[in-house]
Length: 165
Image (tube, rainbow, N blue to C red; front, side):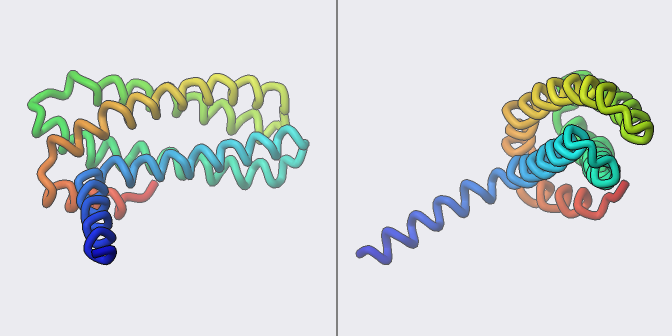
C-alpha cells in the first residue's frame, strides 16, 4: 500500500517535471548565472579585482551562452509553432541586446578596476535581469512547455545544450 502510494507520487512528479523540461532547464541556467553575477559583484565590493575578473568572465560567458541558446534554438522553435516572431521572443531579444550592452560596460569597469562604475552598472543589470528572467520563467518557458510537443522539446533541449558561446 505505502509502496504503491510512493510509486504514484514519484510517477506524478516525474510526469510533471518531464512536461516542464524547457522551464526546468532554463530556470536552472538562470540560477547559475545569478549566482555567478552575485559572486562577481561581491569580489568587486571586496576590491578583489583578480577574482572579480575571473567571476565576471564566467558570468558573461554563461549569460551570453544562455542568450545564444535561446536565440538560435528555443525562440525559433517557439516562433515556428506560434506562427509569430512579433510576440514575447521579440521582447526577449531586445532585452538581450540591452544586457549585452551592459555586460560590455561592466567589462570595461572591471578591467579599469572602477568599483563605483561597476556597481552602478551592476545595479541596472540586476534590475533588468530580474525582470527579464521573471517574464521568461512565468510566461515564455511555460508557453514553450505547453506548446512544443515532447519529442520536439527534447530535441530542442539537446540542440541548446550543444550550443556554446
